[in-house]
Length: 443
Image: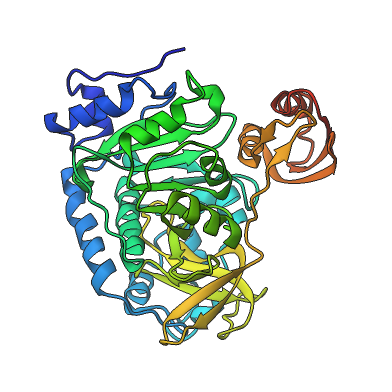
């Protein structure tokens, strides 16, 4: 199937997806979406950033680069002011902040858990939220069962500036412009959204999300050819897709590679840097929180704190803040996302806070999400994200996967009481994913 796309004009639908698009942006958009080696696109996407969004986006970027005041012991004044002003922000806030002296006893505020977002999202979303602009993306499920996270175009646009900040701190500067594809994201999955777009708020630069699975291209040489033609300055992806990137025949060196979502090994970091003659930066980001940290040393699991508008803690099982060097749960407070304000949200990742030789606060991830690629007896590679995409179609609260042997995998599911009617359909989907080569057991 040939799914190349051509835009002859700015249609109403295109304007809805990319409100700030101009005629001058069409040339790059068409080149990205209709190139002779482009993949079989299956999705259309845009930033949905409006003219009114530009001022707060630019203000965020200015503060990101100029105002950084991290305090290990207490949240900054803006967070305290926000909580004092919005203690009735949502039913969750009202219930959680009752009889709490926020400034003196922040550590007594109950921990927000992944389960709260999964089961009680309606309590967390603010009463005043304008849901007409909501964007809902499910998490990948690499740290647990996938959950739906509402987000705002303005909040998502801030990610780009945080990426630029992380690059600058690694002495890398992108030349974003309306004639080139500045950034491309690569994945390696059975099925995933693939699209190309332009970002007017980032100087009109182009962006493509690609799947390196050869089955979604018209020719197995096209992934290399497409990347070689556009030569993106920045390539992003997780360690699984970046490992596949090494198998391509690339004739250029991106200025940087950004790894995210899973643990990046030192070995893969060095292999990418050596073969592609580039700088590899590890990026710690969750769908629920947005970017949190970035690596600026040779250790990919040692992170500098990225955004200026969050409070980062390491907490114990009871939710009390721990001291420097103590290992606990990485916990985030940030209200940037107007649809999902996070109040002491426990990420589920173990970490410890440290100070480097210059006195800068950093955190080290311990026992982070390791990349796991399943293989069938015939050698087919199965990404765990593909498994999670199947599981989230069903009313499952939690799941655990255990590989009993190369040809047998066990799935332990937690559902609402009595909800087992879908097990046969789920099993059929999983068996098909593994090319009917693996026995699937569901408990």
